[in-house]
Image (cartoon, rainbow, N blue to C red; front, side, top):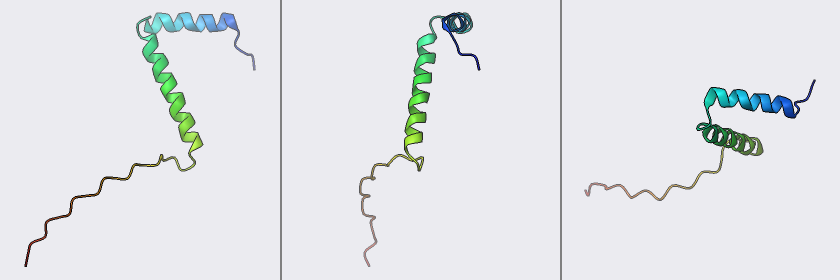
Length: 66
């Protein structure tokens, strides 16, 4: 499989600039970074769930006096 060199990466960057524009590049980069971070977190946790915070104690329910 051929590897990507500098010329290929420059061509891809130019195409992305033409399609999305300069203003949207930070948004796209942030979204890609967030996706990679979430993927790493999910791959570290075998259950797929992060530990949840314990809910605050519920207020006791009013019971009618007999």
